[in-house]
Image 1 (cartoon, helix red, strand yellow):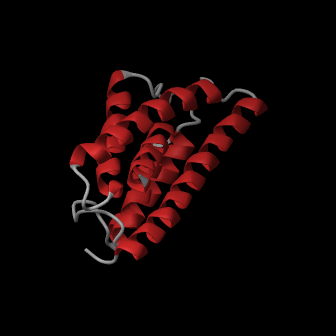
Image 2 (cartoon, one colour):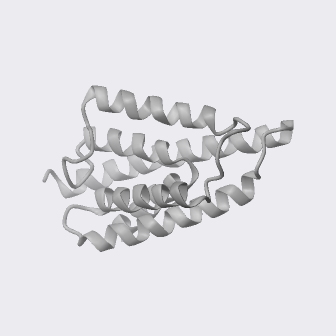
Length: 158
């Protein structure tokens, strides 16, 4: 059951901040917490993924930033959530047991994040909501890495 929650959680992060989910997955892969080697786990990959996450957080507040609910953005978040769910659900789980909760988390994170955040960053309150969403996404990603680490310690390698 823990694998389902990890998958759902990374999907939720992907819905709020897609690149933060990618960075979290890269860090998890470096720590041996993912199911496969298709996630960049080297120092360079982690640095690029982390820089992309920070750039997304900054760019999200620009007036020209597209709405996360437009089709390409929404589909990208779904894909990252599903793939992240597969990666974190557990090595012994069928792919759909990670992909479905990951995609569901991405849908929820996309829609609830946008509803709670609002569309603009014109006022101080708008900025506060945007920064709170950044902190929530980063905090959840860090908590998931910690939780995944505890799960992989009990399962052992491979």
